[in-house]
Amino acid sequence: MENNPLVISDQERLQLLYERFRDVCLVEKEVWTEIYMPRQTEKGMVLTNQHECYEVIIDDEAVENALEANIPLGSKALGAAIQEYKDHISFRKK
Image 1 (cartoon, rainbow, N blue to C red):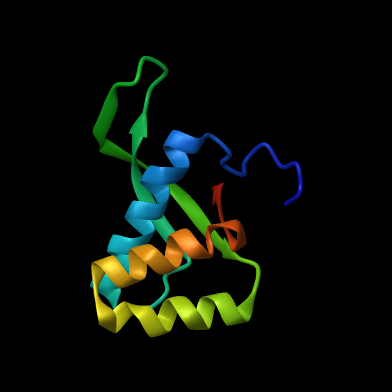
Image 2 (cartoon, helix red, strand yellow; image 1 turned 30 degrees about the vertical axis):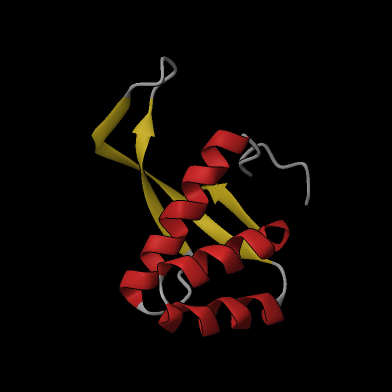
């Protein structure tokens, strides 16, 4: 992964993004390439009326296909697939 300051590397934030990605994929019934998260301020406060947009980057088509195949299997299966392939999934703040 390139050293791009817009690519998210904070582990706590990443975990929230993986969960949001899972939920959006389940609702939309496909692998989604853009997700929105409530904006956080420096003090950890969450502003639910403001959202930040993140591009979802999957660096391997086989991984994307595997994620797609797990969507109909539900939240646990898709969550497990995301955890298994998380090295191939990154998020870039837009």
